[in-house]
Structure formats: C-alpha cells, structure tokens
Amino acid sequence: MSGVWVFDSNGVIRLAAESNGRRKVLVHLPSDQVVSSYACLEEILKELGWERYYGGDPEFFQFHKHSSIDLITLPRDFSKFNSVNMYDIVVKNPNMFHVRDMETDIYRA
Image 1 (cartoon, rainbow, N blue to C red):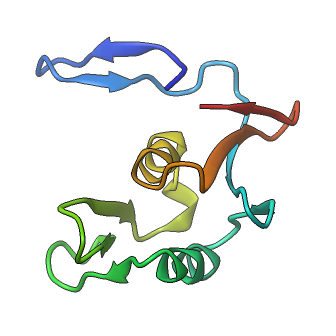
Image 2: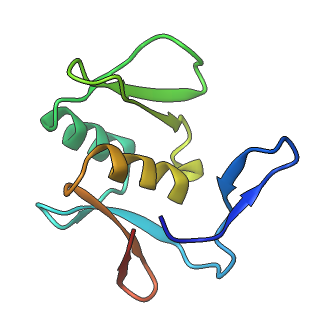
Image 3: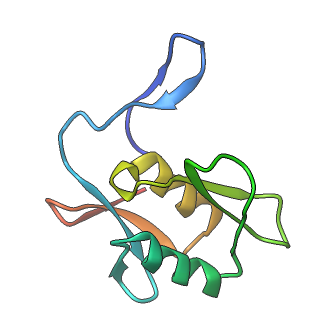
C-alpha cells in the first residue's frame, strides 16, 4: 500500500491519513464502477462470495467468506469509509478492486 506508515502512541503501525487532501475512491475493476455506497459494495461482494456477518459491534458492517478466515470490517457510516478500509478490500479481493485518486484519476495500490 502506498502512503506513509506511522507508529501511533500505542506502538501500533498504521497508514497515516492522506496529507495531500486528495480523495480516494474504490473501483470495481471488472465493471470499472466506483463504489459509491454500501449497497453497491455489498452487491459486488456478494457476487464474489462474501456474506454479511451479523454479530459484533453495531457500529460496523462486517463481511466474511466461508472459504476463508478473512473478515472485512467497515464503519457503518459510509462517510467514514476511508482509504485504509478500501485497501483492506483490495488485499482480500486480488485483481477485483483498486483504489483511485479521484482528483488526478491515477490508480494507486
């Protein structure tokens, strides 16, 4: 993943917030569709074998695959969906999604 990795006060490494102010978008590569809502994302994830996981914190949406131990956890509020969440989806779905810099139309991963 591109970006700046930092250690937080607890010693956990994380991807720093985008400092250039550019907005990122998640793109479904086969359809070249920008994911603009959770309804859109859930439809694509279902086609890829992901199912909604009910149980856990009500502040998050979660998806899992029976064929995997992977779990995708997303904030319930789509406005809080950020590049870290997007890259999590990209890593768990190789060759299906990409993160794009919306302002310059450059693909990054």
